[in-house]
Image 1 (cartoon, rainbow, N blue to C red):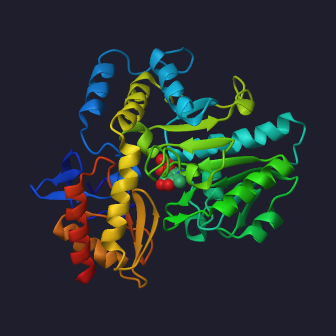
Image 2 (tube, protein in one colour; image 1 turned 180 degrees about the vertical axis):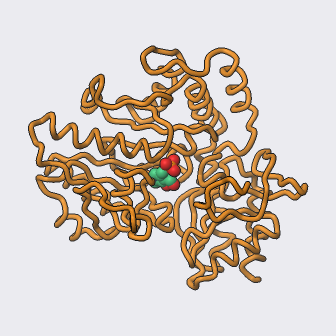
Image 3 (tube, helix red, strand yellow; image 1 turned 90 degrees about the vertical axis):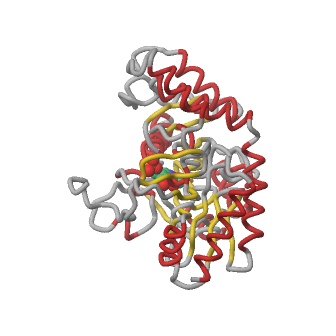
Length: 379
Ligand code: PLP
């Protein structure tokens, strides 16, 4: 363990096994997982469909490179695009990579149109888009950027849900407006419908793209298939990762039909992205979420959790991406008490606790989690 780099503050727990909504440590203690690997394990741990897909595909074909077609790559792209109403998909390996691809596509689209001066990306204060340089430049959190400069230029920040600031920021230089439908790492802060619709209108007026970063909100987590459905807009591009691979590393950039030809052979690429193993799992995850009605389930269970906690503080978010804001900087202590009692949650801000359980959470597990969290808050 000591050979691991020191860039994480890990809990003093060694996990060795998972099943459904539960994790087990090496001491034989079990934990109800209300973090799901930071919004990843929508189907919980060791879901039989995911296990079967991995086993089956691992024995057939794992990697080929993107110089060839595979049935699994085509089927996974169709599974994503089919649920987004057309368009096309580029697979990569993480959320940050999906964001990088979106940034490159937005700039390349402008450049192809002879508008090399259209390179600005309008982003939201408190956003989180990843740790690579483009994604980090779009991540409007000074503490995350500090000491890593110079960052790529051309990223403009506006306060969340501020219509006037948005109107002032978007111009003929804007190639994209990039936002999370719910700012996840920024404290589980939902974007308001009026703001998103203004972004859509301004992008249309000025010839920019609307890019929704659905790395945390996608694949049913908010009680809708996609977070942007809460906003009644259609984005031009969507970035995905986390839940898409059921725990395997994957990212994806989806773009609507008019932009499917922007990136031509040689413009952007990845060695591992979209390999047959991960793509077999992507398709399985999407089909299982559908078949098991987990999107509706996320909405229902999320409502139950919201009701069960609302007297403790402000509960914000949608579906099973929620934060309980206690109004004072006690979140870390509560998280530690919860962990000792067998519930995994995380302090998304000094005052707020993020709740992002698997979408397979049962009603009994919801009640158990509510009870454990209430006790952790009470001290
Ligand atoms: N975008 C959003 C909205 C995220 O929440 C995250 C990670 O938390 C990322 C991008 C980066 O994803 P990854 O850690 O897979 O690079």
